Image (cartoon, rainbow, N blue to C red; front, side, top):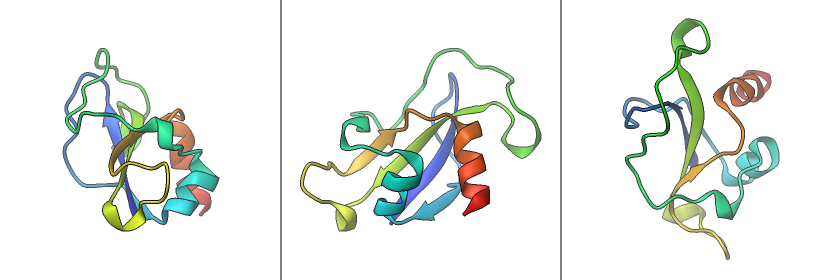
Length: 96
């Protein structure tokens, strides 16, 4: 299973994950690709913003952790930064 987190700009990722989904689901529904892999676990991106409303206010980026159990040819274990933003991913998760 892949673990999904929302990430705020300019802050190190911490706190609970937002969802856990099968790797294939993440590939099909979120556009996760092997080349989304990032070398750093503690990722800070850009400047902090106040985008969004409600409990996920300020979250813009999406990290997906792929663990050893899900590895396939061409994939690396660790963290992948999606090309889609948290607003888009939030909608996909709400529909599924």
